Image (cartoon, rainbow, N blue to C red; front, top):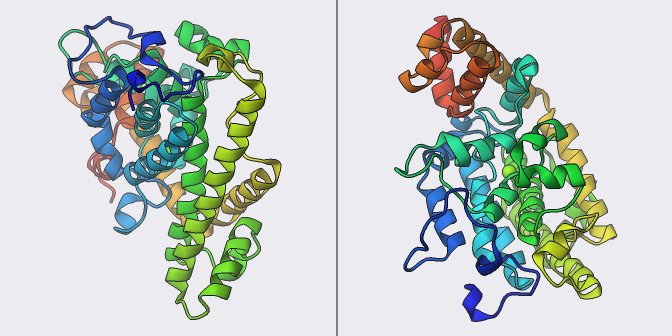
Amino acid sequence: MSDASGALAPYAASETQGKGRRYPEAPARYRGEYQRDRDRIIHSTAFRRLVYKTQVFVNHEGDLYRTRLTHSLEVAQIARTVARALRLNEVLVEAICLAHDLGHTPFGHAGQDMLNACMKDYGGFEHNLQSLRVVDELEHKYADFPGLNLTFETREGILKHCSVRNAGGLGELGKRFLDRHQPGLEAQISNVADAIAYNNHDVDDGFRAGLLHLDQLRGQTLFANQYDQVVERYPKLDDRRLIYETIRRMINRLVTDLIEHTQATLDRLQPESIDDVRIQPKALVRFSDEVFEEHTQLKHFLNHNLYRHDKVRIMTDRAKDTVRELFDRYMRAPGEMAAEFSRQAEAEGSRKARVVADYIAGMTDRFAIAEHDRLTGIT
Ligand code: MG
């Protein structure tokens, strides 16, 4: 969908009114600016690594579980549906979604929490900020500028959260966290689509892994309502198909509600531009209260029953040890890192720690494990 089609809503992000790139570039001949952003993200090294990074289950535990890559693709397709229905910029939404997890460490949240703990005295580690760091600085691909030189709107969407302390150093991009403003609607959609995707695919992965059971899931309103309808209509379906059919209906309920509720809000407020959206005190892309309740109930359920399941916890504890030991090792012996990183790590203190954190954050699960084994002699 291009701006020229005239199909976009007045409050959609539009290339002609965009805030541009950090390093000005001539327009591409056949592609729009957000299309170019999306293409650069797909061509990045960090994007290819997502296939070997954990979502919930460590990459080598099974071939069928989501990885960060398949998660990102699911987020993008959900978000595109919402964007198109609301007449927002679908290409921008796709670019944001594909990039949203580029800064994730190996081993999912466990890896990130541990890296943040390791970096406590050196400015901390935030994965959203790291995603921005990847596209702004860490990718070395183009002759004329560092990073991917993405547009303001894509970078705004990637930076989903940011501490006030770090926002101060980000110029215009960080300003909304200080002013308590919102990003554009495309960024807001990507954010909610992320939660829709993981809530639903984690039910699927959790069930497949045998960590979640039907009777537990039937205690969740969002699941139960759809499940009961499926059983009534297809009484002979086997469990696997039953779950799939239920999940696709759950996603449909969430997406439909999100579109309709958000459209009603937009009709009521009638923002005239993306800047009208940005100055709102609250995000405009939201579920109705009823569906928000169902969605949140499921989120809490997964938190207690899947992410903190004993079997997941054994894996995450091991992942945390791996990250901690890698960090300590590289801080003591930066020469053990790849040449490009060990050269930069000659500095001391927080600059050295940041290089180590960048190096570890960029690792895939299996590379982190292999490095850990090599450095510690333990397998
Ligand atoms: Mg995500």
